Length: 218
Ligand code: AMP
Image (cartoon, rainbow, N blue to C red; front, top):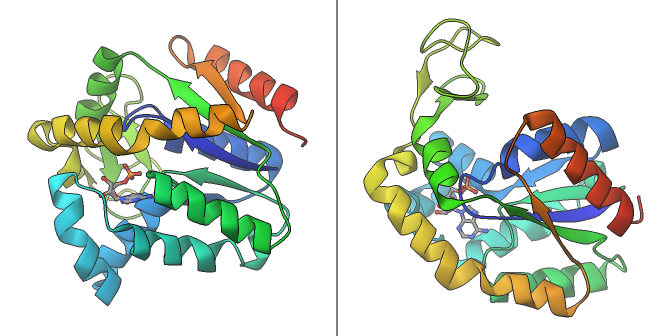
């Protein structure tokens, strides 16, 4: 299965991807995670990406397209993958299409995660991530056992710099301008499936699995 999770920042793409990884045994490919790792490691890519990320702007297409081109060729992605946070612009989507064509593979489907803006804002401002292992929590809905400490590795939980209120608004504006046009792009290809992702977590996951079973050739 090769799927894209499309949705605003804070829609839950990372959280839902983790469940899909468990169920379908295919990797989650998150350009955001890859870029954050590059920033942490201080690589040339990380240094270039950092300034854009801090402001909530998109990193230039050429950089993320190259990241994905290399990543989807890796062995663990041969049976499928979940793209989380890529593509985010029309040129990225068009490049992906060409990459997949050249590898003789197709996308199974694109899930559009639908969440009201008030909920997005709550999820983004409440999100905390572990400095050590990257696990994600939420101070309202997914609390760690001990405040500020990761359940999994015991390291400190912090707020992502781009989850600060002043940056969040910009990320949502950038989404509307650059990423929202992908909805029509994939709708026109008959690949888009909208999934309402508000409510109880287990019910949301059931809706996501059911949408995938219906649209994607697992
Ligand atoms: P995310 O974790 O997906 O919210 O991504 C965090 C940040 O990484 C974004 O705000 C962008 O600055 C950058 N980023 C992640 N994916 C992409 C992408 N596909 N294109 C451009 N920038 C990206």
